Amino acid sequence: MQDMIKESGMDVFAKLVFRHLMSEDGSWISRNTSINSNLRSYLTPDYGYGCAIIKEGIVVYYPMYAMENGTYLPYNAVIPYAELEGILTDDIKKRLFL
Image (cartoon, helix red, strand yellow):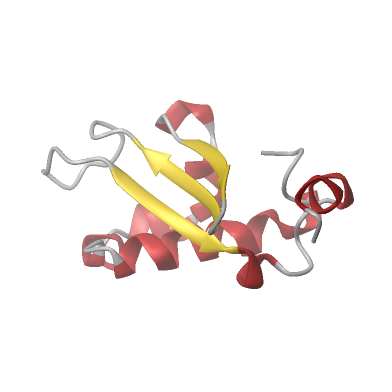
């Protein structure tokens, strides 16, 4: 993740990820105060997340066991490049021709 997102932009990125997760039937997140109190901590390997660069943006994914909402489906959040303006590292912008 550090090679894609500037350290100074990690809190913003965490909010983007969870905003997109909530829009994908993740309204349970808004009710979970432990998640909302430290969104950035959920972007650690402890929670099983992964990320990848795709043509639409950066996708962050959690396997089905990572989120504790009682369902057994994986969660994915695609963050479009337009929303990542200012928080992508210079190296990744060069690689993506942005």
